[in-house]
Length: 145
Image (cartoon, rainbow, N blue to C red; front, top):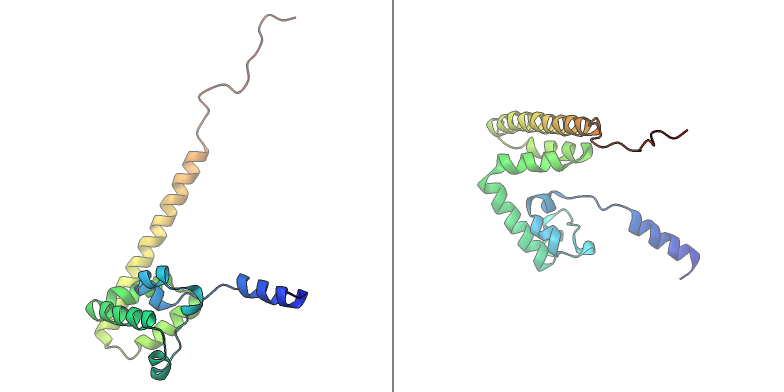
């Protein structure tokens, strides 16, 4: 490989793949699908041209979302970055107002719970670092002049 090809390949390998909502709702798909097969293109025609594994994962994801839409919307929102949350919120605008209110309330509670958990972990780590030694780190020789 030429130096330019190696640089391009290195850039490709070091570029993080964006986490998709499908891999959050269907973690089994994330575990079994190859890296290059994960991107799901938008549009019905592109979805129809996808692999059987993608079609199966989409079917499972749709079924899970239909069974408990509020839960999975919150899971996706919690796993998303700011840009992903914006896209999810844009998609949720077409949902009924009652569902959006439930999502907002449960998301607020989930974020508060996560923040409290992180604070408790941080406090536990700080307490551990201030423990006193039970043994002496050096020994004195007495009566030596």
